[in-house]
Length: 439
Ligand SMILES: C=CC1=C(C)c2cc3[nH]c(cc4nc(cc5[nH]c(cc1n2)c(C)c5CCC(=O)O)C(CCC(=O)O)=C4C)c(C)c3C=C
Ligand SMILES: [Fe+2]
Image (tube, rainbow, N blue to C red):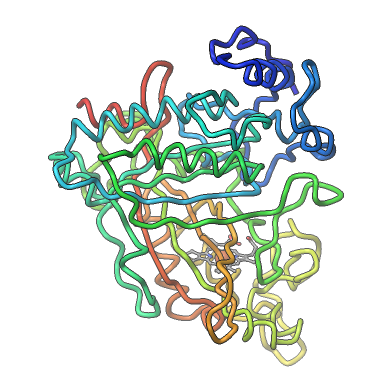
């Protein structure tokens, strides 16, 4: 964790309180670069002192969780390969009647400036005091454009073919009011107040330009909650994220990010016959699905039956054919009765790239729990977010197969859906989406 004093003389010192907090919060800033989701442990211990003090003393160091900063600028937007955070907000907006390209550009400029500032831990008098005592806490803000954005802004010619609406999957039970949207923002942080503060700031700044279409809240395990860093669990209790593509793998970038046109491996977007537009270089496509878990039904299954549904052990995520979490499953192994140890319809078998013509995606979800229905059924599940260079070669073929014959299908329900083009990261002095909006 690096000490970063760059902003010691921050201009955001309009009150004594702000000045004091600014000094202490900048004292210990760790920077998280791109790391595989779930692959890097953030702040394993500590945190108590930083949270206990209402007004930190000058010079008091931030806990490692609070002090971790994710850079806003870069080739890719933050929040894609950033390690999964404890708290997440997803919010989609529609442009207000009369708002077009000019207003959208001004909004992205405002939003980018705010995201840059808050991700650096620089709250100031413009903000409510919600995040005042906290450091950046791994805050990330990620911006995306939905299919409808391009028509509304007169940019239809710039709309990537990869953003064509997803096909209808027969088992889907989608609520249109909680699906799609002109603009999408993903916020993640390891502190709930920091995440809320960013959500509120961005929603306020939408002003008259854009109106909230839907909003969802999610969570993951907090850093330091487990004895050693480990893959997170979902609300069915499974270790979830094991076989995500790893940044160290040679085809990771090609699978997840849109290449600059003219570079090698630049086949992304071409399966529909046209390459991605230049403004998507370094970008990625996010598929967002609110997937309800039918937990009452799931929890009636025996442990053995639950493990058959996935094809992995619940205790440690190891394949049913043995070994540890990271052991490659032996898909040909059969039991004494001749049946496969990992069932033919096991989720982790049929979602594999080698069962889907190489289709791969980076899964980076949040769990959600929105209380209970009137009949006492939990409204809980997974805000499934997956990232890929082209959803037609990532999510779509896999979901087609899952929709037809996944053992997990009986215990989940897809309730909303969105597909968003997430442009590359902002360079210094640039705002996210500038290459599109000023093209
Ligand atoms: C269309 C893509 C996918 C959806 C939708 C999906 C939903 C979903 N998944 C789980 C739990 C697990 N999924 C696991 C693996 C896994 N899932 C997908 C895709 C979708 N999942 C892929 C591509 C993979 C990896 C396959 C591989 O290469 O091995 C696992 C096993 C552990 C792991 O690798 O992460 C679990 C557990 C739930 C609960 C769910 C919907 C609520
Ligand atoms: Fe899955």
